[in-house]
Image 1 (tube, protein in one colour):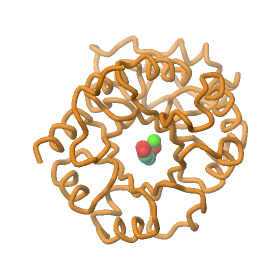
Image 2: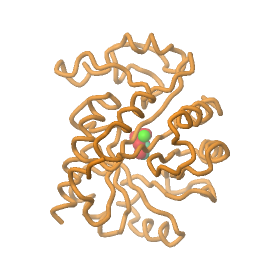
Image 3: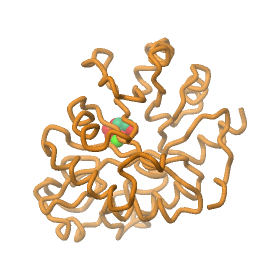
Length: 255
Ligand code: G3P
Ligand code: CA
């Protein structure tokens, strides 16, 4: 393994949100390859379960926004999803991009020229029940990544229940409790990180310090603007999730 293209600045980690999704269609192999080329510390991906129990990297419940098809991911088979174009919505230059199996993203990460991490967000916690988490842990186990010893995989969710299910199956994996609203059910006691959105941090910058005082590492999403990067660094945020990993790394290096 070689070093990352850029050394981390100020110890702030950079996670590529859905890949380098400012430049490429989100969740495509092209977006993730770009994020690795950009030196992202880790790759964020949303995972959903298809009707035939395959884990795919798709954010929305339905495919309309990011493909040329129609339907609900969990009601479609992998082959049905494979037939769709997941790139053309971002312009003809991206046409032909295919849905990405989580297993293929895993292989890409493991083959990267430096030990890039994976920050996996489980969608959708109430609809897929425990089946998604079970399949995720099974697959990670096949690659020797389920016990957390590699330090390469973290699990994220807005759902306390989903994180609890994951923790029962894979207690060694770091758990990131995502926060979108100021009032949330209490964080699970095993959570290692809290993940507030940048809107919350802008409105209440003291939140970062309060979370850190509880011993949590703080990861903020989605941080694309220079002034937000500066705010997060000033507040001591540990990790930035961004659609623009190359630009954010450059900003951090130049600070
Ligand atoms: O990484 C956290 C962030 O991705 C959560 O929001 O909607 O982009 O999955 P969303
Ligand atoms: Ca996400």
